[in-house]
Length: 90
Image (cartoon, rainbow, N blue to C red; front, top):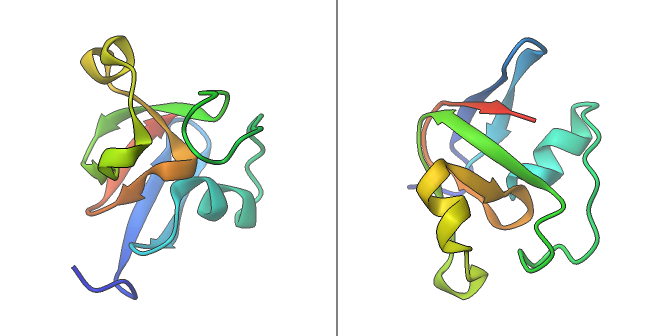
C-alpha cells in the first residue's frame, strides 16, 4: 500500500470523504468535520474508538487492541489506517 493512496471513508448516516491510507483515521475524521472524544492518541484510552462495519484497517502491533473490541469490530481511530474503502459507525 502506498501512503499517498486514498480510500473512501463512509460514516454511517453522516456522509463520506476521501482519506489517505498513510494517515490515522482520527486525523482524517477531524479534518473532514467529524468530532470524536480523544485523549492519548496512542490507542490506550479507547475514547476515539469507532465500529468498522465494512472494509479493513491496519492497526500497528503496538496499538494493543482490547480483545473484546477486536471481537466486535471496534477500533481506536487514532491508530487505525484504512487500507481499503470502509464504512464506520461513530
